Image (tube, rainbow, N blue to C red; front, top):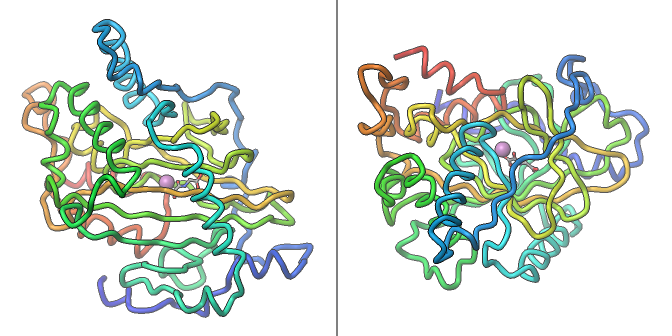
Length: 341
Ligand code: OGA
Ligand code: NI
């Protein structure tokens, strides 16, 4: 499977260029089958939970415990929550989005210098997966891997303290030692990467998706969504819930590796992105991943006779080959590895 990840199976088309060309109808390559189109299923009007992280550090024990419980129930029932009072400067969040918008609005020649390949996906890209003739998503992106954390100065690296705290909170709320998840992911060698998504305006938003349904293959994701435009939808009871971004919140979600380590107590939930004809949208997805060559398996503490291990050990390197080859395909992968033990 590695060999087919050398190059793209067909010439790459930048979705932003298509959008800016003024076409009235989108090419067939972007038209989803009816059952995958937005609005096909019921839309439910509920919101994902909001967690005030300031309460996690409160000296009021009750408030602290209640916040842990809130995180726990959000990770069990939704796989998603919005985090407010995370300590990251709102100005920095805004500026980061602006800088990336500037990048996507720079001349094509400039962006093409960073054109990516499916070997590592790093750089400027327009598709996930290498299946020839696949139906594509209406978005471009920029993907970056970061060095192992021990080479990084956390005071210069804004999202990290927050993600470490969240991994601790998730460990504790699973009944594990506070450093369990961080250590199982490789301690200081935990992986971290960023995907900046750019969803151009689309003349026929009802026929396509900005990002097809998927669950995140990694450990935990922190998403910085655009401030005034919705797009992310989360699956709940078979319906798609459109997330209304709370001002200055990060959207946090459980990835497949935490579903595996928690032995499916915490859920990595399917989500997708819809587009619109009015405004382009930028989002930054910061992924916390296990060090790529460590075996990931359910925590011993969460395995018992009544609740046997649902997944067999696998490295993240092996695991992510699936999405890198086939592109986003709902939750098929974690379900498959579950039934394949
Ligand atoms: C992702 C993702 C959601 C969004 O990048 O994995 O789910 O709103 N992004 O862009
Ligand atoms: Ni995602």
